[in-house]
Image (tube, one colour):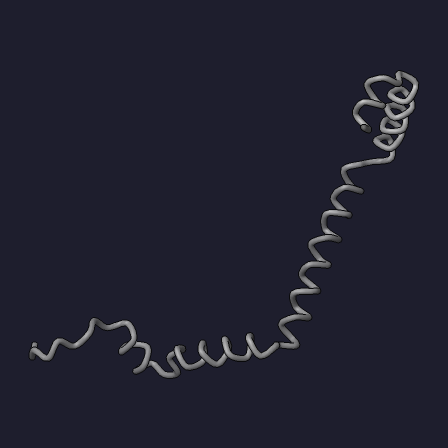
Length: 89
């Protein structure tokens, strides 16, 4: 319906075009960059807030990761060495 109105009403197309041109005059690359950064910073802040208040799923994941993380150099070497097939070398 909106597309039909635009196609049929030349005055409406002209008004909308002028309004769009006026809006674009207000836009600068600095403003676009500021708004883009604001979105990123907002997302980062929300994500950090989620991580500071872990739910049970995150607590479970953290526990699993702690269990899998080698705590010493010996464990690290063991974790990175090939499996022992029982043969002496």
